[in-house]
Length: 239
Image (cartoon, rainbow, N blue to C red; front, side, top):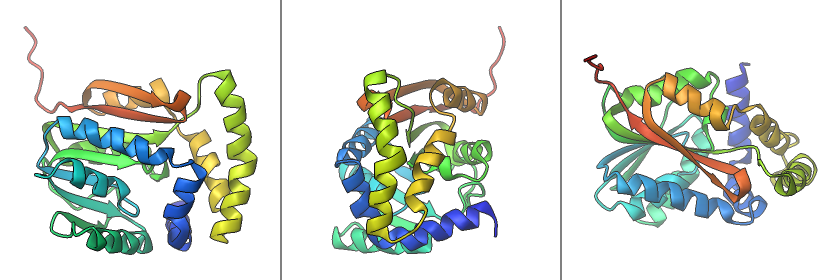
């Protein structure tokens, strides 16, 4: 079994309690982070949006509320996460606006220049090949299209960093294991965050793959970071 298959199976296993644990373990702050991401995307006025690693579609649903004119496609490898997302979409009567399907973020089944905006919330760190996944996001975005990636990161300030490190390493895995009944899923979370090249390192990767006007906004002392920018595909003419 590949690493990607193992991660996908893990998310399938914890899907019934995923939303509850997300909100519990983040004290509900994750909703605010998604709202801020959605608000930035709304300012770009997209009509076609792709949400990569959509999970149970929380960000897709948030964007559908904030951008009434947009149609949204959400993709993920976890079938069971998508099933829960589809139930939520039906309950909120957004099934005419949001479509979910199974797809690998590193091999997206869409043509070049298909979407005005491409987003991902707490998913890129799970890509088997990070750079390839980012390049795919840019490939399917239109020229001058918007990219927004929300991801966990490493707190920069000591008074936040030390308590956060203790919480993520010791308390979060115990609560997650107890509620989800999965032996390792919530040990994987802090490990994947620790391994993710956040901050300026990830900003550099985004620039190298073709994103311009790249910026980032840290939330709650750097527990999470929103990375954003525009896709530049037109060749630059030297004067």
